[in-house]
Length: 82
Image (cartoon, rainbow, N blue to C red):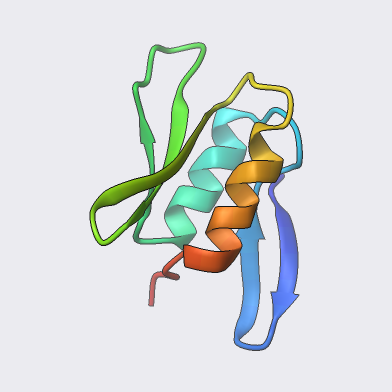
């Protein structure tokens, strides 16, 4: 399950700090308009955060601290779906 961080405007859906599952990534992607799953190769894939269409950060699901760094960008630049 994705982690949640309580913010002034509600709850932000975030990834766990290390590696993450497809289900966890899909929960995050479902919550933000500028976070996507790309380069999907079945067992591994990248989550990408974009700012005005340009890639700001990306991380593979199997990278040791991928969720930690993605969360920093999601917290700063994630655009919640309405």
